[in-house]
Image 1: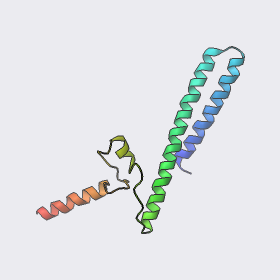
Image 2 (image 1 turned 45 degrees about the vertical axis):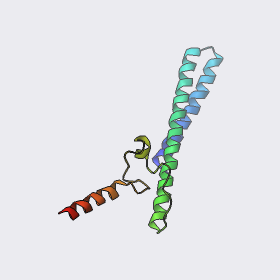
Image 3 (image 1 turned 30 degrees about the horizontal axis):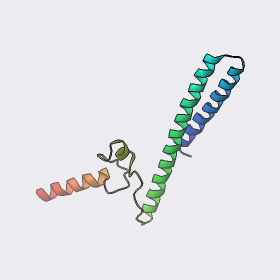
Image 4 (image 1 turned 180 degrees about the horizontal axis):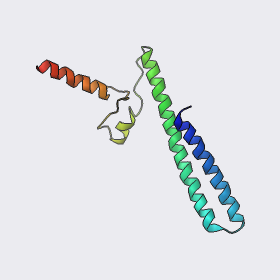
Length: 117
């Protein structure tokens, strides 16, 4: 179980409880607190969705790394890394699944530097 999955379950539980509390408050015509709790339910639902997506990404990266360690050549994930997604492909993380990883880039620069000397 990843931390993301743990957080996603907590956020989903809080969202359900807030939605139930908002529904209960509407019975007594307490609309303002019910609206606040409904907003909290939506917010925690959004958090849970993000954490579930992060959990799926971590599992996909682990499976990709496992297959790579076994000698297979799996296709890069889409997107190849989270940094590439947020930088629109301009930068890549050290855990990048394509040929753009930071470690390969630094090794290439070191090799070019050694050749120039």
